[in-house]
Image (cartoon, rainbow, N blue to C red; front, top):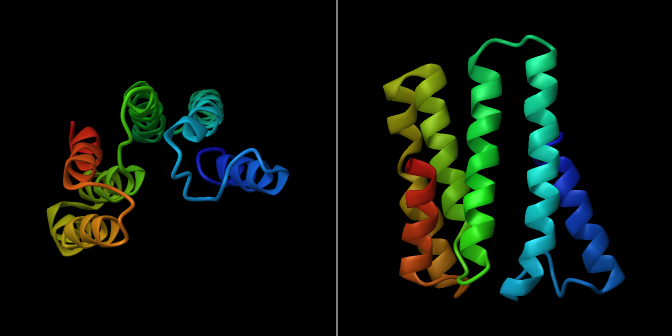
Length: 138
């Protein structure tokens, strides 16, 4: 809820108010505030998981997401990077960490599929897609 739903509601609200052109945020400068909201929400999730005493992996994944979004924000200040590539790569890596190599390998073809879709839709360049996936893999 903190990491995905609240930032998505914020983006929809900003589109409704006319502050963001559309949910795809094609204008790089329009991505900055949603990134900040995502950082705040993910930091809250990380803190909540720590306070609730969840298994070590849950707060670590939230912390990973927090660091990843902060890096994406820093990159976005100068260049547009693919959040979709970052998200799918992160999901495959998380699947591997939680459930093992085989489930991650089953999902791994989604990484180039999502990347190709972003390029075909002309939302990103190849470099932006690779950078997004690479930021998740780091």
